[in-house]
Image (spheres, rainbow, N blue to C red):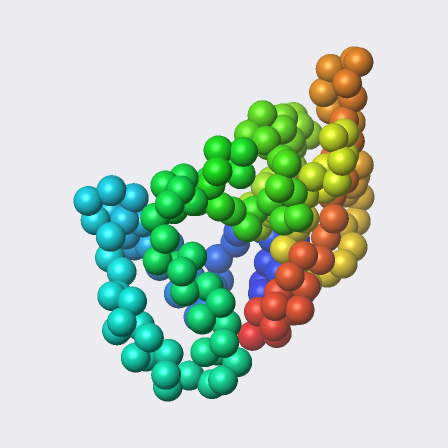
Length: 183
């Protein structure tokens, strides 16, 4: 099995020389992290002025212009302050790590992560979806829609009275991961 397919199927962070797309992403992460730390400081807002961005948008397609004007005010809003940060939804932050889960809390996220650690589940390339107050799905970015052979996909966690269920779901971003593995 080629490395790219193995990586895309199971989300294991292995390296292979010549894997240009993944290498560029991997190499850019520390630089991006450093830039994000700078941008988190309230005195630093590295944004293009709204008027300048509007000039650029005029060169875009009609659909792109329409979408920009729908989100323009949100892009330039600093209120509420919490919405400027990536983090926990219950703290008012924004995140794509918890899809369709507006009521997921930091405590629930920490419980799910503790359950994964206790069961030896690696959480790289995953997102957590709250299905109900007692059920969570961990979505694995992978080209393969099925779990690796022998992988248990359902786990119980929590205290005796308030048991919760964690289900592992493979195939999140399957189309994109398939393209990466085809490289």
